[in-house]
Image (cartoon, rainbow, N blue to C red; front, side, top):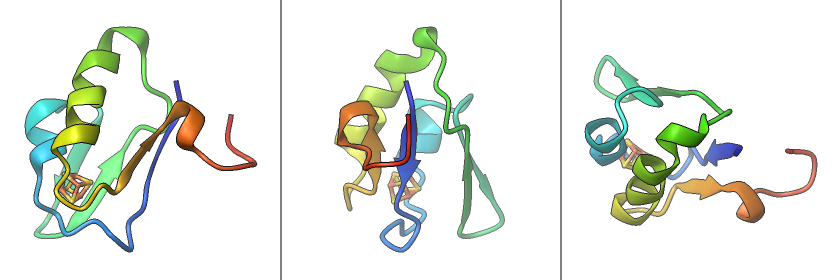
Length: 69
Ligand code: SF4
């Protein structure tokens, strides 16, 4: 499953890092790094991160726009 994080929205609250540390990583105070290709075993954690993100910056799978598979 693919994800995209809208980094213009992300405020580095780090909820996603807390919930899925193997997918999301914060570098410094506000640089979020993430793996766009989520392995199946991480999917539940990523779904929790999607819901937990205070600014709804994480888009998952079918919500991801044209050009991303
Ligand atoms: S939870 Fe949302 S705002 Fe916070 S670091 Fe993750 S994507 Fe950014």
